[in-house]
Amino acid sequence: MRHRLLSQDLEEILREESGSHGITLNELMRRTKGRGIYIAMVLLCLPTLTPIPLPIINNLIGFAVALMAFQLAIGRTPRLPKFLGDHEMTLDHWNKILRASVRVVRWIEKFSHPRKTEWLAWRGVRTGNALLITALAMVLALPIPIPFANSFPSLAIILIAVSQMEEDGYLIWAGYAAAGGVVVYYIVSFELIVGSMKGAWGLLLKFWEYIASA
Image 1: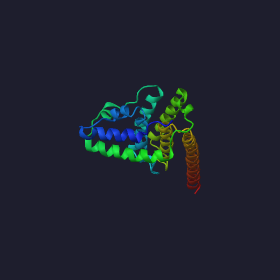
Image 2: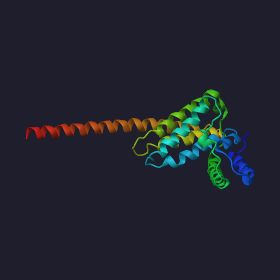
Image 3: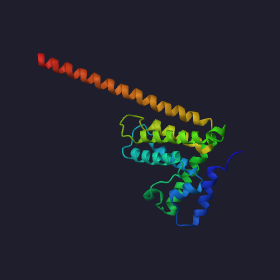
């Protein structure tokens, strides 16, 4: 049996808040029964899919996602810090955010839905996935100036978050594969960087030897 669509929850909140002064991000996550935490992760990670790392932005987004995921892992209700999560934005801003969220979620719901979901509900699996997102978010937060250093962790986070949000037992394997790809990418990149540094150092030593013998 399929659960109520998250896009329906967001549309209902949008209708209910049409005459109010606004709503906080923490309240939004509470009213979407915990699933809103995953769409928050997806929306935060979308800007970091660019191949070129974004200084400061990557760091802030990475730490915010890591904080939310770690709270999930230890069984706490995910909440953002008060200065961010309890800040009440204007109704106009929230309408824009909610409408954008509805569009993103509707697109996700086209290809992701509950499939083989029983094991995804196990406490150990949910904790493990939350810790995996935490680790990926910490990698995203690292100031590593190499191409795609932010893209691959962000993609893995999005796939895992969507899988948990939609209880998709098939898509989660794409998330695990993407997470494995992050490890491989960083190992290869590190070896290439170290090899390049060794080669440059060797050339520098030969240059000095040539200068000394001239």
